[in-house]
Length: 173
Image (cartoon, rainbow, N blue to C red; front, side, top):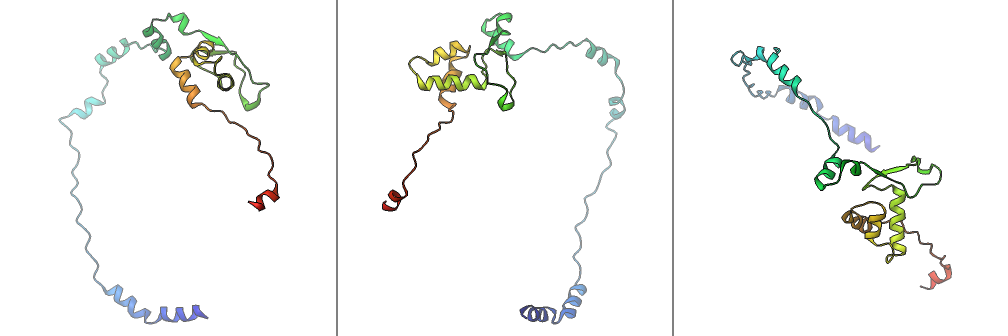
């Protein structure tokens, strides 16, 4: 019933309001910006698309050789190329192929697998006197600074099983 009343008031004098809006003078649109045609730029447009044999021969004489950044870093530090590219064997493997990770046999120096990182951090948490950051860095061929950061910021989950709470004790409190 309420919608009928609203519709009646909405439709009152509808034609007069429409005529008033239609008869209003429309605002004039803003003038358009003058468009200039692109110039020929002193005839250089054609020379850009032409083949230049001198530049082409210079380009053919350029030889680029890509270098691994790890190799460049090791050269700067004075490590020989053979030592820098060596990999170390992995210390721990995941049982089977859970987590969808392939079992790696070699890991580059300065890198860890997830299982090795969890094992290193866990052993440091359990026995911090024996598994110091220096020992972990030496064991896994890591940088000491990176090892300290690993031990500080890489925190594995700690599962704590809480004993069940008695419902009567909850009501008392």
